[in-house]
Amino acid sequence: MDGSSYYIPAAAMGAALVVKAPAMVRAWRDPLLRSVCTLLALAGLVFFFAAPPTIAQVNDVTGIVNVSAPLVYCLLSAFSAACLVLVVNWRGGPPEVTRRISRRIVTGYGLVIVALITLFALGDAPVERLVDFDTHYARTPYLREMIVLYLLALTLAGVAMSVMCGRWALQVRGWLRTGLLIIVTGYLFDLAYLTTKFTAVAARWCGGDLDGLSTYTAPVLASIGAQISAVGFCLPLACRRVGDSWSTWSTYRRLGPLWRELQPVSAQAGREVRISWWSPVELQVTQRESDIHDGMLSLYPYFDPGVHARAYDAAVAAGSDPVQARAEADAAMVTAAVRARAADPEGRVIDSDAGTHTPGTNGPGTHARGRDLVRMSMALRRSPVVAAVRGRAGV
Image (cartoon, rainbow, N blue to C red; front, top):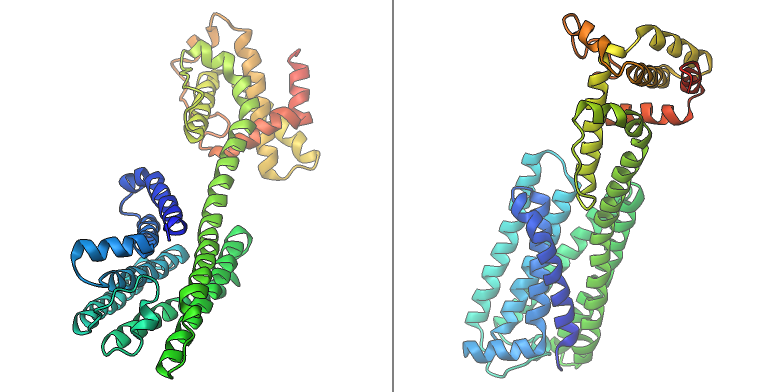
């Protein structure tokens, strides 16, 4: 028993926790992030301290025979509480309700942990058992109650997780629903693990010997259940992150036509500040939007409301809805303004307009959010109304 089947997942949980650590430092008040980090830490500790070599080492170091048993039971109980708290925070709801439910879970399992330690202290376990403590001491006073208590605590958590995730899965769609159903599948294996444990312990109470269920079958079921549940927890979060990144990259790419259209103006205005290509995509989107707004700011004296009105009417006549027609009209006016600015290298229009122009009163999308800029950008590429304005400008 080299413990590799325990130490490898423990190391994986530790690595995941290290990856999450910077985010935890930045947003330590986020209850969902705290729940995830707590879950990862406890999962790693459970695997590490449940390994037979670690069990023997802990017993030797403390000088207390079988002290690893209540230690592992307490960690399992804490892990069960962490799973429940994570799902409660993940599901969301009124913050005061979420906090109240989380406190009740933590308090309840905290009392279980105190009871486990107390029962072990009252019991007598003189013979060290590395892998079959449950069945060997199934009939020993106080230790018997300790074993039943930890199994009941895990069963309660398993049933609660299955019910909560199952009900939630009926209310959602997409990757979240897939992840929740995977979690339910994992907890079905956990409940099978607990069933084998209870069966082996009950057999001891009746004078039988089904220790193999507890010693060999149960750990396999627990390992399978833990791995499946881990996939269920990670899948929606990972897919959401990938989806968010893809959406942000898509926004960056779709802003390209408008950004390139305004590049000459931005460069003339001296406002174009470049960032490194390896910068986070969110920062690159912000930079691109800033370049676009700076470019349009320098174009305000050249914006022609007449061009905007005619383009809007043409877009509506072509079948565009009002929002799309407004984006096409804005894009058409920007295109015309860029050409007008290029035809005025001396900036005479800017000088003559300096005393009367109020920035932001006649520009396109003055209060536009990112999605409005995207509509304008796509209109530059696809709209026949914008193409017609380009043609009249001699482009």
